[in-house]
Length: 473
Image 1 (cartoon, rainbow, N blue to C red):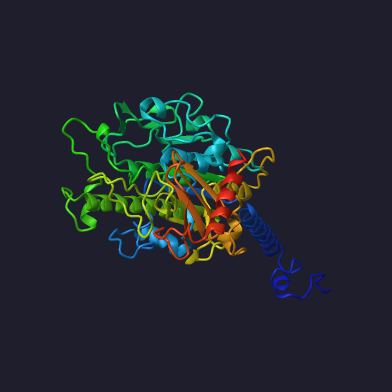
Image 2: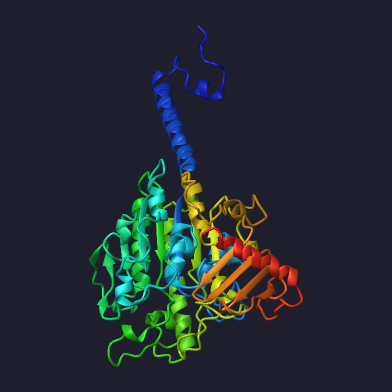
């Protein structure tokens, strides 16, 4: 009697008329293969994990990928650029730490979220800070149809009063500090111990804070990658923030701090006295920590479905403080706390395997509030129409689907400084009672030639755009 099975190779091999046991094994294997295929499909279709890494006051010209004359070695950031995109026209929405972080986490400029200045001293850093009614990225991601696991490891700096702390604003886990800067080994801010696990003080004196934050992020990524839920890791390093006298013991030198191994690996001695070389060791140690985090991501097998973004919170400070202001913003003008390019344009990289082309360079301008929009799109969350966001979805630009910036213009205001960029043109003024200066950035990245007198119509166009922005808040 002929077999009822089709005459295909697989069916002939497992013809139940010849060998029922083999067929049952084949059926089990087929079902297992089907289940595996479904799991792969679901994983590929699941929302991506999100890893946002920020550093503190790193200059545009500190990295060789932006300034070939820089002596600083950053092999892991160089590799991140090769695996994804290097962004040459990326802006922070404010040139100072506190405000920059608030803009990143809310997707809104300071004039909308209300936190327009640095939090002052212990009282300010441990106060309410950012308006508790503002929605932050982790709170947004908790509303996704597949809610994200969330962790923050590093510098908070937007308020630490009860109700304002990370674990009260959407983060399930937090290891870090409340204030704008800490001693890298003592973990104090001024007179106060300033390292926390959640809302409880954490005592890990003697451990280098850059490594401490990296280790916490690696543990979070490893554990959360074992589960089914996507995760969001916000890793705001304190490095390479300049040292502060108020954080030092009596007689302790106010110098840049890095582990002995960091000095040795770049050919220096740990007692190196040159501030710039000590700063280079701090950046090298930061790069090494970022490399360990990215290696941990690879080992967790989550890298293929993770969107990674790295940026500096603002430009290096260039305030002529001896032994302190050694970061480089070349070829940009000035630095942090100003609205010149050196304060606002920052190094940034984006990596998303299979989506962002390896080794790509994106010259179109966009800015930090766009990351809130990216998180909304990646997680599938629809934003409220009643809230005015200043970010726009940057993913088409990052993935190459679009070749043009989604922005018409960019508005900046910090203390007395103000600026607006529209296309390749930019206006800047340092005080409200001073006339606007006009620069063509495509030809004059250093903002050295004021064209206001030569281009009055262009100047009027940008001033009108600045006033249009003001009319929206």
